[in-house]
Image (cartoon, rainbow, N blue to C red; front, side, top):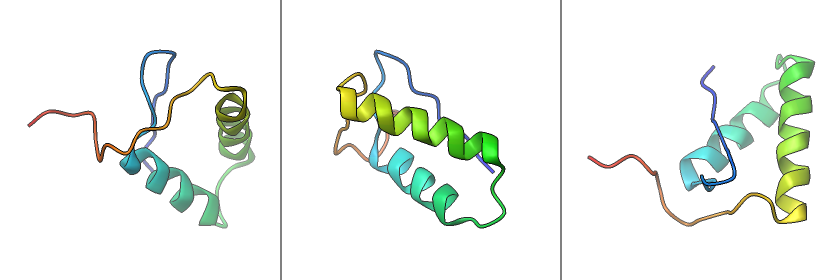
Length: 60
């Protein structure tokens, strides 16, 4: 499983959102991952994390 890193200066991209969706749909995901995703969603609701329409932040 891959992981996404989000800090105060990095937005959540489309790739991040699809990764989170896949993790939530994975029935074998560990409870620690659910807790981390829950905290991330809380930060989104509070406006602490920015959501962007960019596909990725990686420049090729």
